[in-house]
Amino acid sequence: MVQVGDVTVVLGIGAAVLLISVIAVRVSTRLGLPSLLLYLGIGVLLGEAVFGIKFDDADLTQSLGIAALVLILTEGGITTRWNAVKSSLWLGVALSTVAVVVSVAVTGTALHFLLGLDWRMALLWGAVLSSTDAAAVFSVLRSLGVGPRLTGALELESGLNDAPVYIAVVLLASSDQISWTAPLLVIYELGAGALIGVALGYLGGAGLRRAALPSTGLYPLATVAVCVMAYTAGDLAHASGFLATYVAALVLGNARLPHRADTLSFAEGLGWLAQIGLFVLLGLYASPSRLLDVLFPALIAGVVLTFVARPLSVILSSLPFKVPWREQAFLSWSGLRGAVPIVFALIPLIQGVEGARELVDVVFVLVIVLTVVQGTTLPFLARRLGLVKTGEAQEVQVDSSPLDELGAELLQVHIQRGSKLHGVYMTELRLPVGATVSLVVRSGKSFTPQPTTRLQTDDQLLIVTTEEARDAAERRVRAVDRAGRYARWKGETGD
Image 1: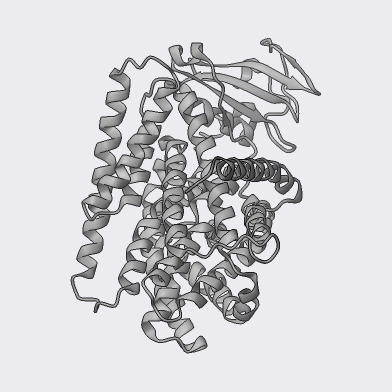
Image 2: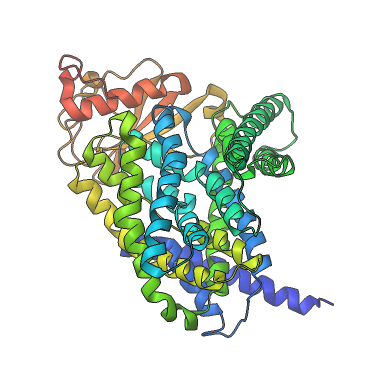
């Protein structure tokens, strides 16, 4: 029987871990390390190797992991702007389907010959390792300043590829013979999952717009509940619950929701909580004493995945879209791994597949190594390839009822060194009707700009824009950033 004192201790430990993890975000930003590494480290410290908390329940870890992934996909979908990713839709779909097939085949074939794994186990390794992590991608890419085409494609890939990878892992981990109907099953699960997500997202958005809830705090709760319901509906229909969740969240996040800013803030906080809890849990589950034993096969798998399978899968899946080689190189290096492969690796372990314990340990080592290598070098690579866009507008989330009533949003623009926005007068910016620069921050001081105000490097602009004018405002800012005050004459549209 659980005692009150036990609950008090658990709550105290949980609160302390959460506070330390929140502080770790600040530390990781200063060190240039993805915060998930620090969360994993906290879990390892709490585990059997240091503080002695023994936790080895694979079933519970997988169940909690899937629940956390649902919340992470919900946050990712809700906070993804459709206008920012629609131009990358088919590239993102190709990366989440064609690239997955290529990655599984190439990785599995290589590991079969290099490590002597039987074909089914080798392909299982390839399937587990082929999924990019939504939490890692969302947290790293959105702060890089890379153009919307690449960011949108990678966000869609990480949000969509969990579904086909999960299906592949379940099929390969099963003791049943894989029949010729397997591809049809995959098509059904993905198609049905997408349809369920669209239907529940549309119905949920329409219902929330018509509801007269007594508190603004209920709208974010209802929005998240619809997304979680999409997972349940998809799973009960033997379709992809992960895909249904992400699609429902994407539809809801781009609907005219009441108190949208509150919903986005709530979803973001819930996503952080899920990430922290998941990575700490996985760190707690890991056994450091076993990790050194799998270091060699992990490094072999990492080299194959990073330098052969991922680049080849990106090249083949992006062929129809004529993606420049610089963007292909960035896409290849942006296949960030995180909690998803670890959670999926638990599936064969729970089903008693021989060699599954080694796979879990290998994946854990790979997540640490690849996160350090790729996560820390991605900003440098983006700059070297010339893919960082200095004039990108970033959305600012504030709790403001007047903005909701007007259907308006806030954008923040930082004029970086080398930007053609430097020296442009406010009258020459010529934002579309419905958008205006309401505030300029310069040298630590803020002021309301006048028509004669001349923009300078390191200025920060706060732009108020209606939803209808937002895309045009962003394009105009990008155009002037690239070509200066005569952007239109030079044919620069900001696309």
